[in-house]
Amino acid sequence: MSLAPDLRAAIEAAKHHHGGPRPAMLEALRMIQQDHGWVSDAHLEEAAALLGVTTAEMEDVATFYSLIFRRPVGEKVILLCDGASCWLNGGDAVRDAVMARLGIGFGETTADGKYTLVNICCVGGCDHAPAAVIGRDRKLVGPLTADDLEGLLGEDAR
Amino acid sequence: MTDKPLTGRARPDRRPHTLEEWRDLGGYEAVERGLRELSPERVLDMVDEARLNGRGGAGFPAARKWRFMPKPGEAPGDGPNYFIVNGDEMEPGAFKDRILLEALPHQLIEGAILAAYATHSTEIIVLIRDAYRDAIRNVSRAIEEAEAAGYLGRDVLGSGVDVRMWVHPSAGRYIVGEETALIEALEGKRAVPRKRPPFPAQSGLWGRPTTVNNVETVSCVSHIVANGSNWFQGLSRTQEGGTKVFAVSGRVHAPQVIEAPMGTTAAELIEMSGGVSGNGVLRCFQPGGGASGFLEPDALEVPLDFGHVRAAGSMFGTGTLIVLDETACPVGVIARHMAFYARESCGWCTPCRDGLPWAAKIMADIEAGAGHLSDLDILRMTVQVGGPRGRAFCDLMGGAMSPLGTGLDRFGALFEQHISDKCCPVARDHGRAAA
Ligand SMILES: Cc1cc2nc3c(=O)[nH]c(=O)nc-3n(C[C@H](O)[C@H](O)[C@H](O)COP(=O)(O)O)c2cc1C
Ligand code: SF4
Ligand code: FES
Figure 1 (cartoon, helix red, strand yellow):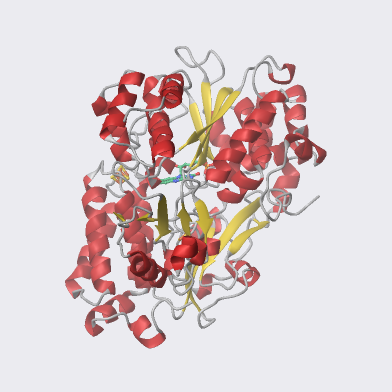
Figure 2 (tube, rainbow over the protein chains, first blue to last red):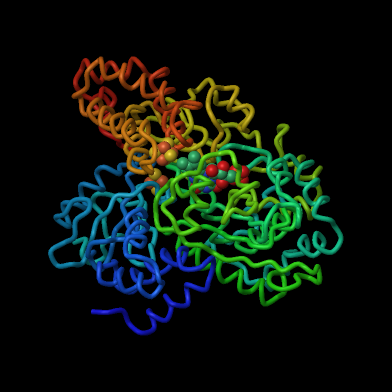
């Protein structure tokens, strides 16, 4: 499936924002991901063509930045903090509980396609440790506890 | 005059002010005064006299960095000077810039306009990490408002200067916060640090003179221009000017952001954060985020600023404390840090790309009770090779070696006990990572 016309137009426009097509690559990747959740090879190639850069240049950038997803992800991506301040407040137990509840490890997506779990550090929510951010708006949740994941998973916590 | 100039106006729910609301609180008066009545040189001198040190980690005097920026026509070639605000904040334990970005975007814009004026910059870029979506939105909106009000854009306040400002949302990777890697990122490349010299003030973004400052550093500037250098210097208890937006996390009852005079002690900050949690007895703390060396209770009364913390054997860094009580294991904390730094290595130079994953693996083994005494020699060698002023290409690895090196020095016996007892003795005696 190719990119929607308005997204194509936005990517073309990004070329003229700041410094030409190169800086526009990350902007394009972000826009594609915001709409589709991740960046497929086909979309990456299409965006590269729109910007007039090579697919290799686009890949170069897309593979460096860890929050550009090059594989399909679930409806909601959970970025779970594995930093020291979270660990000091029971982060390991929360991690284990989330993994047990969802039945997946880091880097994996639930079979129903609802959640992808990724470890990250630090989410800048050490005052809410153990913390995570979730969804395309990167909503901060915490402090999480192993026996109450409702703040993170809503109804799916039960 | 409030004793919390930077955070005093933040709303509890962090809802940002509209430009009108901000002006009602005295906002943009400093910008009007600065651009209408003061020369760029005078603004720079005021920041110099205020003794504003950079809040992004190294504590470099802001004014000294700004003086390297050439005046219009002085730099060879055509093009603008760039002023970049660093809002990448990803250091473990750091969450101080978040409130300044989310709740106080106009304060940041005011500071950025004045800093751009002093550095002859006409393009301002704010890089903000991906996870701070509210910050990205709030700063972007505030920029639009400031443009509409004539504080940004063409011929700002009749000064004849055009100033543009925009937000660059990042997409992960801690190394983007390193200033030359950040410049690469803005040019649309992989964020691998550049060789220095040339320094960014000589050749930065697209080869143009560039200054990079931390969000908190920039947020101080309008207050200095509004209230004077002496006032700013007087906010501090030490020779380094201003208040500091500290943050305290880890084993404290009420982890939080605290704006307090530069030179406030860890004892006071921990007390303000509800005191030590766990068993209530402090074992150690990192005074400046994950990349700062451990200090012990004898350092509780050290005035926290760049000079004093350095003299005490650590680094003030981001000014964000990570606290460990006696039931928390520093070996475990170091293991988390090594895993983080290893994951975030940009991969450019060998000591870091290969050394950090090795150190992380050894730390994980030791923590799990599967370590060997000879591992400690390997860790010490890694600290020697990659530590401060070591052989790595940038400070990511040097920073990572601070907690490891000071941890080995201060808690050597604890490392050895993990190895001899084949388990974490702290977890065994107190329960694992219980808060
Ligand atoms: C690996 C690494 C990550 C960094 N991350 C940040 C960051 O997120 N924010 C920041 O302001 N400075 C960061 N710095 C420091 C910057 O390189 C730079 O010194 C700083 O932005 C300058 O601002 P200041 O002079 O106002 O402190 C980092 C440095 C290194 C080596
Ligand atoms: S020290 Fe690490 S982050 Fe810095 S250049 Fe080398 S590999 Fe990259
Ligand atoms: S260490 Fe987890 S949010 Fe900071």
